[in-house]
Length: 138
Image 1 (cartoon, helix red, strand yellow):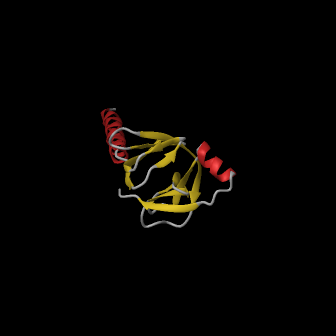
Image 2 (cartoon, helix red, strand yellow):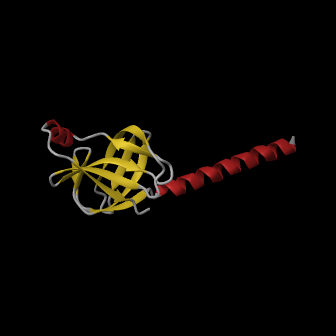
Image 3 (cartoon, helix red, strand yellow):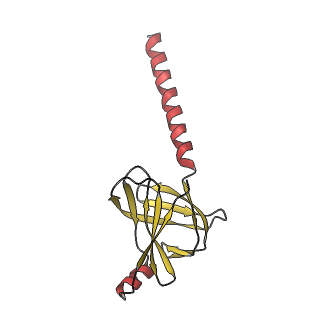
């Protein structure tokens, strides 16, 4: 009976340690320097350093050190070849940039961000779009 209690205590301790480790490793998110203003979730954010974290199963939180940021819904998991570096993909229409995708190094998966109303308007007008990619620092 004593042996069984110690097994349960050991299991709970291991579970708590593992959950604390996962929380700490995901705490910082990924960081990237974005050299241009960009739009995400109908909010235009200034150039700067941003931290991107998974807020929920289908939402990303993008925030800078001044606490400017947005929550962006992701609508699709993308699959491709495993990348050496993580990256953010933007759609560019003239001087307007829109966050479109985020890819994670080594996993071969990414997420597509739900397009904002203003990006949909550019697309509806058939404005020429270019792709801009930024490597994620950490």
